[in-house]
Image (cartoon, rainbow, N blue to C red; front, top):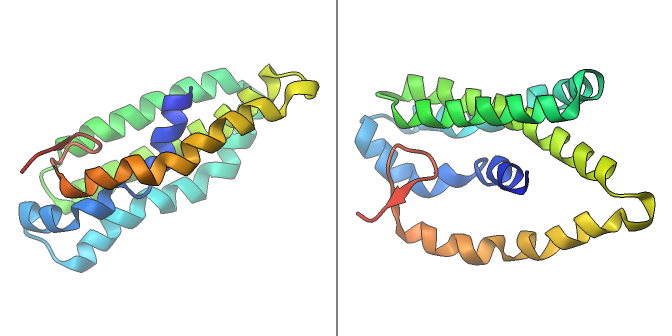
Length: 154
């Protein structure tokens, strides 16, 4: 559950370090690339509240698993994208999956821990959030492949 949540947050900005390789690989302009970068966050924001409510009604665990499957599908398809139009669509699919993952994961944490120890999951995540910038910095020197989140050395 933690890995899916971290991926959904990390994926909102992971392509920022690969702007130049994407411009070269897809031979596109900056306007099209802006849509590649924005489509994930836009879709994530559009469906976040509605899918959170759906999780309340239909089951949080079910929605978390569906969100994870949609997220992985969008990521795999993004790796197979042959142009910026496809990459925009597949990043939007990832955003849809992440918008199901995020509220479901938080709700599952709140359900799992009793009120007395409710701060435990939130406090245990603080060091990870604080160190995220530290371990993400070496990635900036890598040149990512079209596979989102699977960088390789250039």
